[in-house]
Length: 232
Length: 154
Figure 1 (cartoon, rainbow over the protein chains, first blue to last red):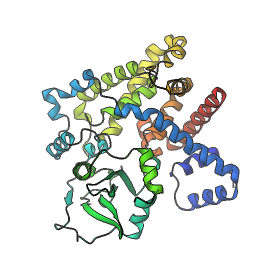
Figure 2 (tube, rainbow over the protein chains, first blue to last red; figure 1 turned 90 degrees about the vertical axis):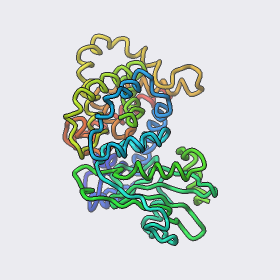
Figure 3 (tube, rainbow over the protein chains, first blue to last red; figure 1 turned 120 degrees about the vertical axis):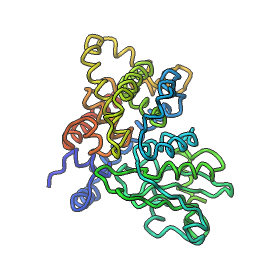
Figure 4 (cartoon, rainbow over the protein chains, first blue to last red; figure 1 turned 45 degrees about the horizontal axis):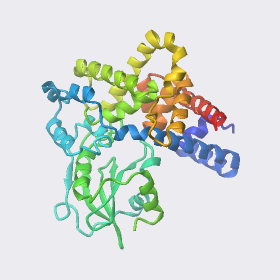
């Protein structure tokens, strides 16, 4: 089997699946040189991500923001969820960029609070818990089935993580008994379009996360540290 | 769209290598997107659509202007993202900006879309308008070139 640099990059970016992924994974495990290539690819990704990240925190120049502040802006997102989207946009001054893809979503999504739709004793199942335990926002792929949107601490000082999944996302907070589901969103019809409808309900979930959070979302370094300490 | 602005700026600054050209590109992108808003199809991703607009303007403008300005690019690039002089890391940031500007356009956009913006290969390929395999190899060539340039510098 020949392994091209393209295969290594695709593997490192989480682009492979099935037999091909298993094949490359085995080759990488058996060959330290290949493993180093995977690491170098990931390190480059981390470095570039960190290099450009400050742009997201810079205030958008007025001349750009004002272009969207004109009255006709209301028509720009002219679809069923327009009102909803505008509301969540107002409520997401800091985390708006995370919710960006949600602007494209025309799905309605319900977020249930405990007592409404979710048993108050509901906890993440093993699969979800594994993702919440291990996955860092910085090193996940757009194609992952479950994506962590962000992490924060709630009023009790517990670590919580907002996540997005094809079948609906939610928010889970770490407790002694595991990841307790604080909110669960249900996906709507048409969730399986050609594009992954990432963020069908991300805006609502993020809005709720913002209400629950006692401070800003964790940055990459703080998230990594929290993960290393088991989210306690 | 407002919520997308910071990400669009990041992509624009990455493509152009400095904030002022990046913001100009952003402005042109917003103008074109607002003028063509009826052509955005509901149910498709707004972010991909806008990245595609931005990328096409950048390519068009590049053909018109940048070719004749090529000799100035290397100097200008030093005034890049982090180059406000006040930051400790300004020198290092400048290196990355300069290295990015040395990449051919097709490799630079591939690297930015996948490694910075976090798009899947398929999504990035649709934004750029090329096959996934082509996107994959541009990404690898761009990455290798970056490693080589940054490796020399350090």
